[in-house]
Image 1: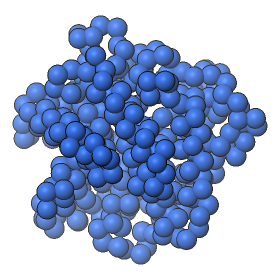
Image 2: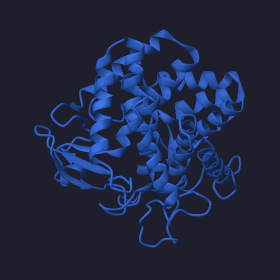
Image 3: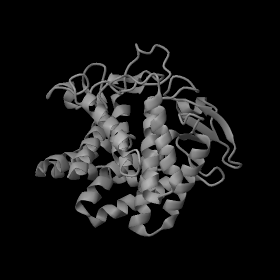
Image 4: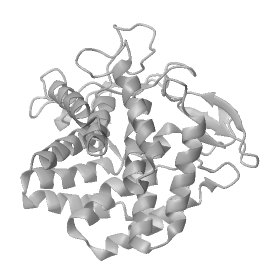
Length: 347
């Protein structure tokens, strides 16, 4: 069990290894080590990472990329422990079982139980799924098996074709026919409406296509990452401090909740994107402005408060009434990742 957020009664909510957020806190330990150089974070990181060993066999949802990539991926990057390569490659194999060749996508959610079964979906794919492709790229690099790479590219291409509007905002959910590949419907699950731009979804897309360009050097991916950035910073509903409302089309702006997690993901993605783009200076300026806002007392908690999470004011899912205006472990993870990336750029 490791911490995910804060419950309504003020206690910390812990999650088991099968929760999609289980990899973020272990990953945070590795970033803490990189930022401080203190041995204790290696000890914590190792213990928490290895507690997720069973996740490598998880096949019933798509978030194994988050779970193993943020934990084992960072662990291997820092210590080159060869036993971790087996976990990463096996996790990629598990994720690959969700690939639907007829549609050319990795299915995000199963549709046989829970609220997902009530939506009429056959093969729902969420923009968040772009974040799981890095695991597949890493698995090809570690194993030499190009199957993982090929699946990642097919998913990225299909998503690019169907998930974006003309202004490069994205639908949250696209549902496919698994045989013909036809799009059955386009919806939201966590955004305001089917036609709105859910803030964290835009951040996932920006980050995911930046990774895809890094791994493939396909200029289409660089271009779409830049277009998503253009949408974000061109939105008339983006607040002056660059921490977005939970949805760019939420009905009561400016009296809507902010999502610090979306801002942190965006800042980290912009740091990396700046290394690839001719718009380097613009992206670094925007990322620094976001980080300055997140580091201010408005969003960064005082030591010992906020149940020891770093950031305040994130939003999980307003439509589900879940995790509203609370700390979230992935907000902290991407905030620390962005700090680390800024430090690396300055060295």
